[in-house]
Length: 267
Length: 267
Image (cartoon, rainbow over all chains, first blue to last red; front, side, top):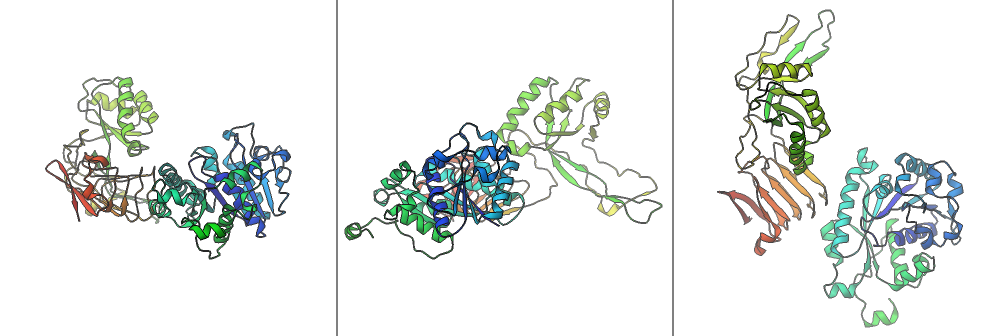
């Protein structure tokens, strides 16, 4: 039985797709068979970040409408054999998704895969609701600023009442907080909420902090999940996140500003 | 609001020894709609305005139509039923008004409820047995809640129920405890709303809204461990965040009404 993880936030532009790509790649690199599904029907992006946009034939909506079977639509990643991508449809809108259809896709993937990563669209409309509905775990991607934090809080509330686990009175969805685009120097100047502030407002455990970095933009542009650019801080941070999710005890880093020596030696 | 009493009656099937069913007495508080005019468009429009102020109060709520102030002898009950159900409420009966109106209501399968005077237990047929010990001995209580929350008449007999919520109450969530206290063990996020007919206790940080005594109980109080509220109110007397003294912020406080004035006091 696979574990289904939704990457969600409420707010747009906080790093959901970047996180989905790197997190799924990280799980696959650790030897777990992983599928990552793009739920952003109409605004397909995950294929670009994963660098498989030129190999998309069928998509999620085709599978739901029985126009293609799951194996025809899944794209195997060229860099890691354990990773498969199920792209969204660019020519349709979110109404093409149905709870029943998504349920079928997740059930079928559950048989062969260890992890199913669902990349949620922004907002709290149909696409986002369906992306989180079947989740066992949720990674809440939050930027250290008030509107992102409030939207995350709203999303947590929706998940607590509208997910399948909530509706069936099962154990609640396990929630993890991931702070992205974090800049310790701006926190120090008081321009940005600190890790403690965000944790205090959301009262959640911290899965990790991803530092703001130009490397992420470059990686996205070149179609490579940033976790593969091993020398960058962002890759190290995402590796930590995957390790912690899998139960490893890894201390938090990238929370404080590097000192002079730290910058010299890249520690 | 109107109280209804039903007698506690057991019905035995004379030929079979097993008890097929049991009728028990119950007392319910129902929203009562006092009609002054039979213009359905006006009713629809004005009722919708009322409901929009607190949609979750009224959704799927039963409603009694009070015809005491209604002077006409005719009212289009089928059309009125449609108007009420289009607003997601269920019309279950009428009270007051002329016998002609009662006849029309009965034709539409609506119950006619008695007004005011004490109700004597009705004689029942031989195969029914009345459990006299369970009969309400008080006179039938009929009270109305005024639209103005400042001058309410409290129902004489209501079931007191309190509610405890142990998970955080997130942005966008609303909780309402009818006839009792609401106890929140975790935080109340910005954009969340707590309402109770009685007191509200919050053992975490209050960042959202808390409204105690919403049916007009001026003795209701709010207690919280850490006050960062957007709005607090007791029996309709409210204060928004901007008006709350800086000394009281982030403090444990109690909030009560003292002669129409809202008092916030450190604990």
